[in-house]
Length: 316
Image 1 (tube, rainbow, N blue to C red):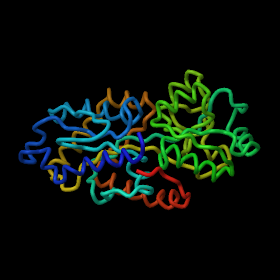
Image 2: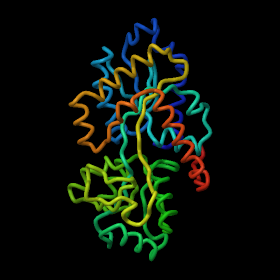
Image 3: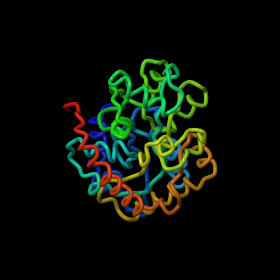
Image 4: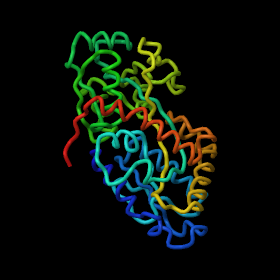
């Protein structure tokens, strides 16, 4: 799915401004019917998987099912967003909404680092060898991205800048097909959201070179950090949060936040997310204020970097 399609999906969510089209009854009675969760990414990817896990457990707290919609939203709408949809896209695309002003935060959900991975046939065995090989072969390697301005794209550009390397980006419509081509050897590299690589790395189907974080990733403790490979400070976290449109009553926000807190405290949910390599937001991060502050800090950090990279985007 193109980044512009994701922007349209969030614009659809804002069509339910004031949340009146979805509530229909007093806010304290919310919810009175099924809730749509917008997930503007393909089914089967990490964001879609997270949405289904979270939504299924929130049903127990809210008393209504949460229906995942992978294209547009309708009815009582909440939006599951991530770094790509709530940070990267806003730096590149003109939209009819403001990412900070037109959405009200519910909670941070999870974090996962970005991981530099490569196909098994690459003639290198570790990150330092990879960087040396890329420097010796400028513009010859191919790297998957999930659209201009996606986390995979920006992470790859960031890696190029910090390591003084160059390679060609190949756009994909989602993380799943990119993973398939990487395993199949049709693409050389990817800066990928770490949780979607876990099964392949553990199964010996691709190489893991570095985790772009301050500390090693618990799911793959043998993979070094970017600090350890000689590129200090090269961090990027792929995080998820939950929002509702501007104008949503405070009572609804409190109720939805309570359902998220209950969900993320559930031992079965926590184990499922941990098994997928997700790091669950701490209880202190599970508040609307915490998500608002974190979201703004990420925009303040990344928008100047993205815009300075002069990333070219497809026309609508």
